Amino acid sequence: MNVTRINASSKTYYVYVGEGLRTKVEEFLPKTYSSILIVTDNLVAGHYLEDIEHNFDNERVYTAIIENGEESKSIEMFHQLQTKAIDCGLDRKSLIVALGGGVVGDLAGFVAATYMRGIDFIQMPTTILAHDSSVGGKVAINHEKGKNLIGNFYSPAAVIYDVDTLKSLNQKEFRSGYAELVKEALIADGTFFNTLMSVNLSDLNNTTIADHINQGITIKAEVVEADEREAGIRKYLNFGHTFGHALEALQGYHGFSHGEAVAVGLLFAFQVSEETFSIRLPFERLFSWLRSNGYPLQLPELDSKHMLSKMKLDKKTEGKKVQMVLLQSIAQPITVEISDDDLLRHIELFKKTLSGRF
Image (cartoon, rainbow, N blue to C red; front, side, top):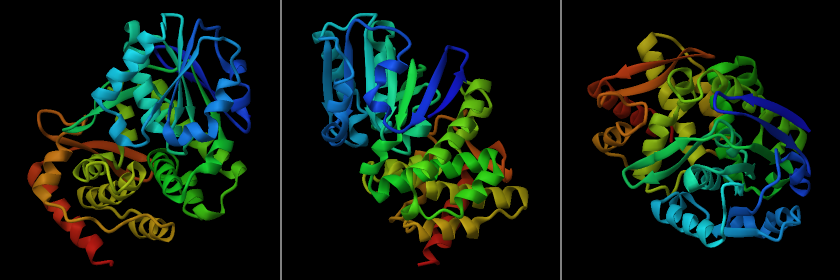
């Protein structure tokens, strides 16, 4: 088991990564709780909910099962879970357990952050993608106009990451998670990036996955400790997300998964970086790795102006000007304001670049 200490400004907590951790959850809790609400989704529940329930002797253990998918990060589901917490009699000494991927973690975390002005919650990720979202204390729900526009910074009491749960993931989920690992490597660690570019996602084992996850968490931890509330360098963790989030939104959160959209966003950010700084980045290497590992790289029909309008809803946007995270070189990120005209030109060029490869 690997243990990473997160020294955030709001609190210190630990991230535990290992095999079989879901059977000994109480060992990792910072204190005793009066009642517990486990929030999970309908896919994860069938695999792991019973395992988690068996950890607790407390008779006041309740469960809430949401529908799998980004659509559940809604104001309606947020309200339903608040009502569930009230009906179950949760108090300020209660705990919410977020058992699942990023959607469950974001939603359950935001419920915890706002219920009775804030109660403890723990993250129990069951996807590779959630190694990123479970660490750092960002919790949120979506608005119909954009992703994660309603949320808070609220750190978990602990993150308990049982890598055994990853065996139930399909290849789409593996792709989604590894896109975030590639993002972390690109902004912070060229050696890690080179390692990932030699990986075939169909040949991974638990030991290798855990090692990659721990490297990703280490990068995330260093950034969060330096800038918990995204006033500065934490924005770099959004590398690839300006285009990626817009692509997700334009598809109504159907089609590309979050990580798959971010993967395309990484390529877009490479293109913009190369022109902005007159440099060469490993675009071809990244493109070849993504294609060989089954990432969808053919864009749907996109209206460039509509795409731009979605990109302007990015949380980094200031004064209606898009602030994109770019690379001056591998592991040297920077935030740059991009004009609307330049963005439209980049979007058009990028569409041609990808369409010309298929």
